[in-house]
Length: 316
Image 1 (cartoon, rainbow, N blue to C red):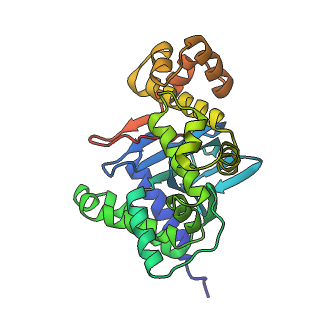
Image 2: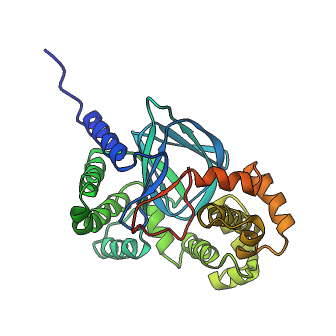
């Protein structure tokens, strides 16, 4: 008697086939749903600095690993990654022509997440897990089926427009009622320490090009300077100043790749006063000169007509 086909494997294969159709070109492909993007790599990508927005990252083929604070986060066909706050870390990709890395990154709409969190609170749904900025979790059947419905809908512009937002809300609900829900709900609860740091991170991403000092961030969070430093490092594993510097470098890289700006102009746009200091810090961080990195990055960016850019940086 032959064994029954594995429905999880069949779903995984179908999801990979759909992303293969939706993202035929290597690099990033944005679709008409705001912020949702596909990632494709036909070759392995060595460990490199990345900055992810608050998002859900699902890999349907190939494997990815994230490195942060001495920990390794695996995301592949069996596990997906959730970031409740924008975080810089290092990413690595396993892929080949025969088995490309096919993935999608779903942005977390904080307004929709807040609405879901309020409904869950009103319904008395409590989640005890400690909040984390980044975590990988098993991809269960319910969540996988919801993701598959989203990919099927994206094949049709009409279905994507009419059904996509509702399916994205359902995906967010699945995450917020799963093991990652505590982190997302804590990030939205501005009275909690995690929520206060989350708000400060969003402030940095909004105003990174202007003068930002740690004392002001601490004051806005309603925390002492010492408590803010400790809380910030607990969430991001880095200091506020280093986080701001990293954010500026990633933003400059994207400006050079997308808008064709030179290093001097990009460095000024993101808040650097010295272009030579920017170039030194850029090469130290990315391992390439601004010109070399922008050329490399430009080859990875593909955008669908009418697609909206994210206010964050998302990279392989």
